[in-house]
Image 1 (cartoon, one colour):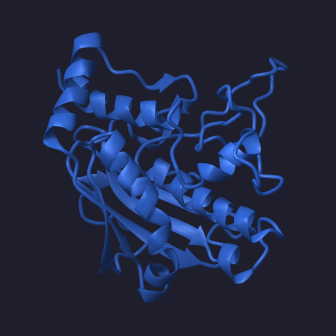
Image 2 (cartoon, helix red, strand yellow):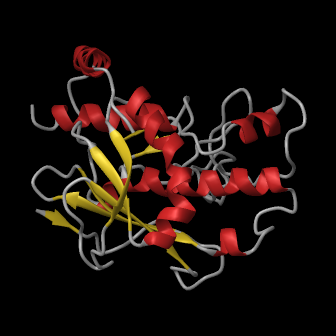
Length: 259
């Protein structure tokens, strides 16, 4: 049975051989579950300690959510399917399950709502977890419609604005799959601040860093180099250095927690 946490936070097929390879490598190198690493953190505060290898599906609360948002989940769903080994399919299915109720197993319902948290610009993930093994069950994903109804919500440059929309959608999907904000006290001042996260050599922070990707994009990329260009090019993707290793570990945890 699934359970809705008391606190809420901010397709495809994979080759069987790839999935077996990921699990075999993990089993050979680890003997116990891991819930945090460089640039990633499991959403244990919401009851999620692992990610099931069984397929997940993304559905929509209504036709407006489907028409406005379906394209924003195609890239991250394909990335998790290919690079993590957990199949996620973006469907055309409509699901009217109320917000206070967990949907069927491994179903992620996307909503298009005005200020779902009662604050401007705030979207929200409402993850559920399986009470039997604490794996990611699915849940509700609430996107703030202001990102689309206000043409320059994130930036006056259309390229940056669209990149931020893509990041926002993928960020909330990451929460449903079991990733928490990995913010950490990088400057060692005793305070974990917004945007304070590790980064790779190109300057890219985890997508799950709060706020989305840690730092807002200041301008669109017009060249093929530099951290700003890299961020725009990566819009809507889980970072290969941080988020993806975290999701792979959550997948490994599913087996390790049963050993």
